Image 1 (tube, rainbow, N blue to C red):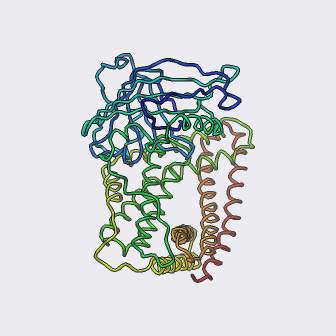
Image 2 (image 1 turned 90 degrees about the horizontal axis):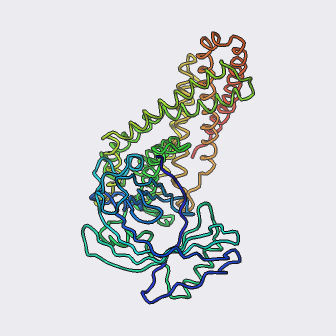
Image 3 (image 1 turned 45 degrees about the vertical axis):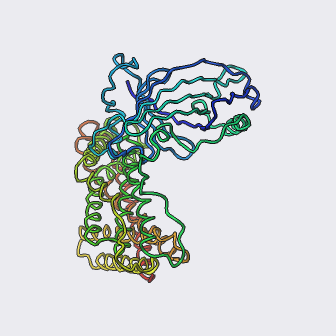
Length: 506
């Protein structure tokens, strides 16, 4: 059975043993009735690696027995509105609270491989919960929210047992009714509850056993910030995003490969800009690893772009074997390259790269320069690369070397843009105009190269398509001409943007 996925939007409250749940009928006009489902006995085993790789990043992996949600659960951070929860029901052999724990289902554990990195997962805590559940319903009997009164007894694998009582209010699936949450909160606070400081029961059970993640949000920086302070925040934020996107790629989420590859490139550029803050050999090794990661993902990203372009190119053409053949080739290429990308993310070298990135710390034995000065120098260096690539294109003897020079120019413009965007947290850094011009080069030359690739893929599909449906070749011919026209138009725009960037010194 496949896992179900939903967004969990809830609020948690600490409460004393003597407190009584308030009457919630009429908390908002929509709450017409409260249905008491009685008391449930829940037993939940939480799993993690020995070094709490999941807990340090706010990820929960657990197996629950008892209650309507018995099964295996994974909770990860969402988009700010709530947490993403993936669930698989227990099979017959695991339906009893006394059944042996067993290994987590691969369907739930595999997307977390970028966090676990080959380390075994084991039970880290067991929580026994006596839960009373109240269902808030509207006048038609529809579920609005669930309010639970939990008496918790936690037994961590290492540490002292503890117990507490808490209330939770969780919106019904698909609901985003903040007004209901606010109204219920007003009543539970008046009944003696206080807003909980813990996002999950297991976090409270483990307490200070779990070390805090070193990759956090960037601190506010002044105009004279030292390079090490700037580097720690910016690098840490990109590493955290890289690890989060690893899970998205493994789950097959749209655009995840592109975002992961872009983040790796941004991080590589930033590490080059802030290299003096770190050990030189360590930075060189990390940048090499990030370059290899980008290359490993390039096939999947290119295939994704190609499939999207070809789908759009034949959208107005009559359906038939020729068009179907073209789109099937593109879909097969995308699937094959995506599988290769995920396989690359399972390699020991990649896991070692993530470990090394997370262990990176600025040097404490040097006098760090100001971040603004170091980033200005990096910006000038990237601009020189753009100019060299532009000159190579102008002097290119043939179409192959011209295309290589354009590719180099696009990469150089991209690095320049990333260098400027990385420095935006520094007050007064400026150079936003360079970022805009570099992005214009990147977009136009990217469109040019993508259109040429699409035209080549269409031409490659023609021989077999002609055998399947001779008349359908006309459809492919029109699509081919359209991509060649787009390539020419994008080249004109890209060259104009390139020479405009060429003439603007940072």
